[in-house]
Length: 234
Image (cartoon, one colour):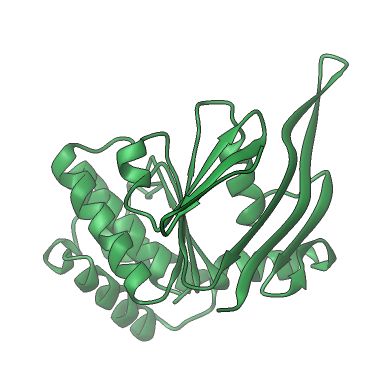
């Protein structure tokens, strides 16, 4: 299976109060196409910083990041925007839905930015809502939906451009147990469909749903576990 993500000695340094702080202290990591990986670690371990770099939302201070063989540092801002909109689907803890428009319109938003016509984007958005079991709620606004339903809308929106990579940052953090199980079942289904799924969580039971668990501490990956293999990196 080909490598979709290749990191080599990735560092992210912040200058705070006249001092340097290493949010990422030298990450080397390879993720293969179709893999389901969970990034775990306590608050401040660097997992969200790493996710932002993986999602091309931020650039590293040092190191190499290749996405499907292309060096991300060589991409222009416009090329990065296209990558974020078309190749990567994002799911966030707080859903990030627009409150004044319907679930269907929220799901269709990435297609608006991509210049897709109204009829096609409506059809594609409805198809994704059907896939997450929310077709009957398509014309409801977010405040009329439960937390689990809102997250399913957010997942449908992340999928509407048919991205090859799904990145989810604490997607079950605001959900009850029942909704959490439903959301994780969707991610497992995406993995079975050969999507690459990268999940950030601080909950071991959520990480256990992934085929690979990466434990972070102090800006480093200290443990890499999956498929019956445990490797202490540091």
